[in-house]
Image 1 (cartoon, rainbow, N blue to C red):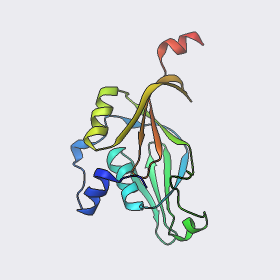
Image 2 (cartoon, rainbow, N blue to C red):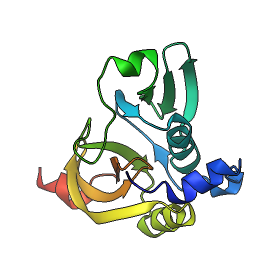
Image 3 (spheres, helix red, strand yellow):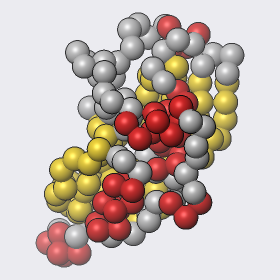
Image 4 (cartoon, rainbow, N blue to C red):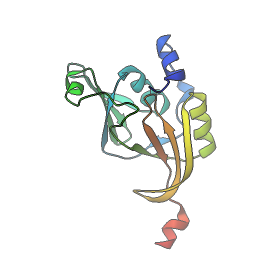
Amino acid sequence: MPDAGLYGARQAFGLTWRAMDRPPFQLRQIDHVVLRVRDAAAMQAFYCDVLGCRVERRQDAIGLVQLRAGVSLIDLVDVDGTLGRKGGAAPGPEGRNMDHLCLRVDPFDHAAIVAHLRAHGARIGDFGSRYGADGEGPSQYLFDPEGNLVELKGPPDPMDLAAT
């Protein structure tokens, strides 16, 4: 099981992130992604406090929290809830319920993004140029508290657009 690290410690002591610790970017697009989660509170804190989502809708009776991410939604389904129990075992080291979630962000200031992620104790992955819905551009990987791979994708490289 991945270490919840700073997120788990802050949650255990009832601490919240300061308003000035908001992300240095704005999320832009994806319709929705559904994550089956073991610790819904830690996951909600990560996606809201670190990545700037907000709770749009709760259906506590079935164990569903829908988070607004720009024009998109990230659904958190508690594996112990009514809806989550229909999906089988919780995600774990032996398998995931997705490869990764890519969030288009703007602006993409790599140094500011990495500083923000480090300030929140996020586990940071590889940086590189990757292809996405808008074309080739900067991309930073990181991991949420349950080990899901998240990609923060910047705008396309203007040279890539000129070549097409």
